[in-house]
Amino acid sequence: MSSTHVPRPLRWVKSTYSGGEGGQCLEWAPEHAAATGEFLVRDSKDPNGPHLALTREGFAGLVEFAKRHG
Image (cartoon, rainbow, N blue to C red):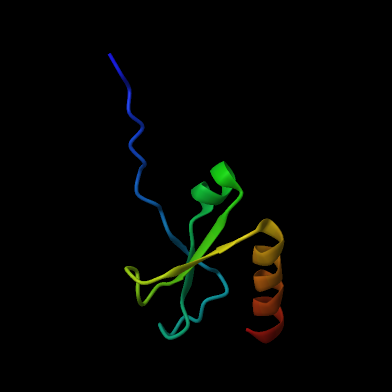
């Protein structure tokens, strides 16, 4: 018997720094980041569109930017 790994769909979470008016919404995939060290980020208004793949440092920089300019 063989076992084939079937990846589960990503669970995307809206950033707490996203605007509440529905205009500027950023989502990330926390379980993927914990499992792989790769931080995926996307625009919640376009869930089938492209996403960014950031390092831990790149993601931390994005969060700092959001804190300063949010």
